[in-house]
Image (cartoon, rainbow, N blue to C red; front, side, top):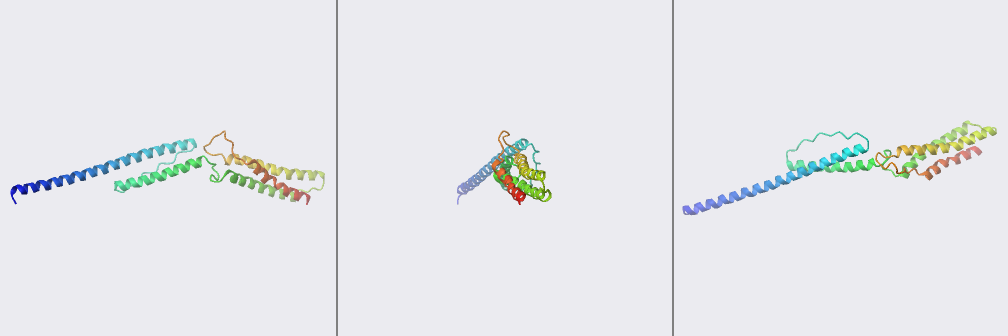
Length: 208
């Protein structure tokens, strides 16, 4: 092999090494640019979420949550960004859950209005039955006055139970965030049926 052929071989090897180095540098630059874009995107999303959380807390008239310290880095930029994306996704889901609960009543927020109101009226109706049974045991209708007093108490207790249930729903079923002009669902008929049914106990006890 002549010196010229050896020289050409050296040039080809040098050109291949330079081309390989350029390709590697291009791939590294593309990966770095991609990581940078992902980092900026995650930073913008995190800032938007912080603003949304603060606005939600202000609308709900409560203190914003404490900011937790950033977790320790894993050392691998791709792994760190993947962990940050997972945390950001979880934070977004928690924000949507908080928005849902903020527009729901603070007491039993996942229940429907008729279920929650039925429980409230039912509790007061049960208390009304207990009061009626106590009144029937204690108060004696030996004369007309006693019978009138006994009947008045037995009839008034369901009305009191209904009113207390109505007021309780107005307090317990009012969401943190909502239209103040929108009427609360109080299930008027359901309350009358549950509390008024205690009159059967009163009538049975009164005439027995």
